Length: 107
Image (cartoon, rainbow, N blue to C red; front, side, top):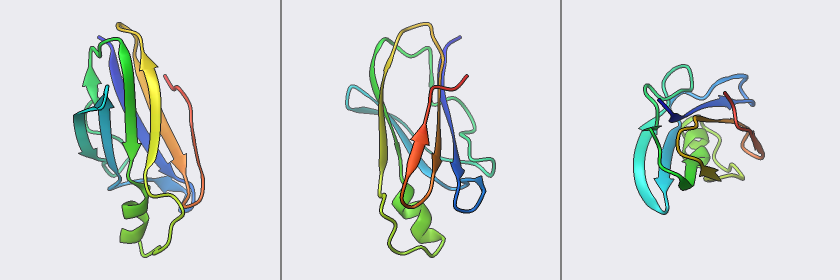
């Protein structure tokens, strides 16, 4: 079974990003909205057997840092647009600070 999943690492604090808001959209339509768990992950895949097409995952970095007392993060929302081929799985991790981020297609 193919899926889309994610996890997030707060590099400023050197730990998983617990309580980070994440949204998954397919062709502009909201599919899933979650908050990451204590391990910085979703409890379940964001999508199962995703169709071929354009997707976007959005990480709410600004609100996450404000709840930690960092009042002026440079990043507000980190959008990652990607294309899915049906039958393949996609793990989209995010490593971030208030000022920068990195991602890749994980396994």
